[in-house]
Image (cartoon, rainbow, N blue to C red; front, side, top):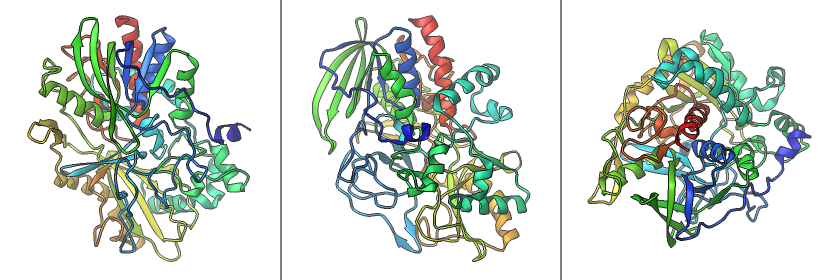
Length: 515
């Protein structure tokens, strides 16, 4: 019954509120993703009253179709954040563009465009956990020095990674079921091809309820992963933060959450910080502006959101004493995508689970780790699809553009060539061995590589540079960064477990020493 209980439409995980103007708050958390949820839970458990503000919606009310989240294959207004046309990572199929017009709405996936790159981010209570593929990977210990230099690896691997994995509900697929179920035929083809080219192949842990997926396959529960749900939220089986940290946050009785609220300014004041917050409606208009006073402020708006806000606050004179490292050290986790066209005798299956659970590990030899990703179109495509995470030296910086009243990013699309070269160490070899070719119809017309995006933004307020070794911002006691902005550009694997574990480490120290 565990799977069924988890699988039903979750009740509201908290009472969504609207923060009062002129409120005084002991701790304000900006954002409700992994870092923000860790900070809020641990602060509340330590006896501190917390208010969380979230730019996106609560995602606790079914739409007209009876479901909270839109399906990947039929995006509607729920799919994208304040766009009038979808901007899907896979823009074309069989030579035809697949984006479509939609009503402008505070939807769940933000495709934020900067010069040279589109950054995909989750919008809503639960942040990126709402829209990611659920691959919950702890980096191999020997690569940890690349990820967080200066952080004690023993502490992370003995205490904080285990804590994060337990809280997030991380689990592994049953290998026997994997080998027999139709919905992972695509992954078995990917495994066969990798092994035939002598690449190390690994099962990857995820935060999906595997018992629920077995019930989906048996036809006894509403389908979620087996209905292709991934990009725009998952209605049943995925253990997003809505089902892990947030119910525990609610149970403390000390945390309130205001969805559709966006922080615009943070300034020092007597007893803490004056925070200006804009309340939004579902078409993105500002319907109210509020000022609250917070003794402590935790920036958890994600790598991009936190970095943009801090850069703006420094440049516009609200927080002029932030140091020169704010905005720097941003990376894309080396993300690049590609597809391969298989032979007719290697069908990948019309039914594909949307939750990837296999990876090709060529990190040591070629600087690339590739997840065998689903292409859940509902038809046989004979295609293998991959998201690679690669070793890349390139780091960009955010800067304030006063003339345009916005924050810019110095990323260059040409930098993705390093990632493409690393990914080719895997796929050129497989294509050569199998006598196959790259697909050229998925990212445009005659375009092999999805080199225009990242799902894994990291950095911009790097630990031990913009902050001290626990996320305290230099120059301003009581201001903290607790999210992926702390991580300098790469985690070698999918990042959310590392973001969660680092937040657990940092907030424990902050509570012990600063409160």
